[in-house]
Length: 137
Image (cartoon, rainbow, N blue to C red; front, side, top):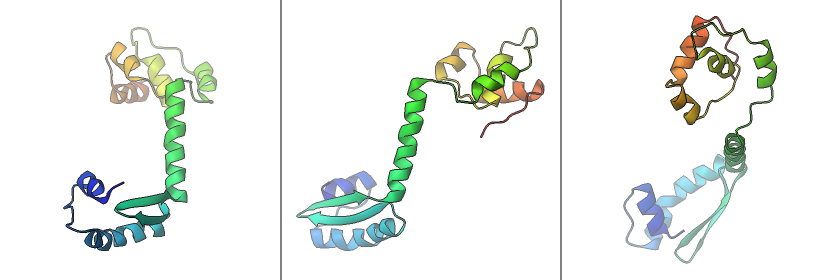
C-alpha cells in the first residue's frame, strides 16, 4: 500500500517525503509488532509492506468462522437440545418460541426479527417475563 493512501485512509496528514512518513509510522508499526498484530514490515520504494502477525490471524480467523456460521444459517450445536426442552409457548404470545431459541444461544436473522416486528431487546424481555432461562454465551 502506498504510504499516501495509508495516510488518507487513516485520516492523517500525508507527509511531504518518504523519510518523514517512515519516521512518523515507525512507532505505530513497532507497537503493532509488539502486540503481535504484525510479524514484520518493510518498505519497497514508497510502498509499506506489512506481514500479518499471530494475533491478527487469530482474530481474522474468528471473524471468518463467525461469518461462515452466519451465512450457513445453521443453529448452534446445542440449540436443538434446548428447543426440545423448552416450555410450550403461552397462548397469544407469538414471540415465545423465538425468545426461547434466542435465550439458548440462537441468533435470529434480521429477516426473522422484521417478520415478527421485534428486536433482540423484545426477545430478552419476553424470555425474562416467561421465566425462560437465558444461557447465551
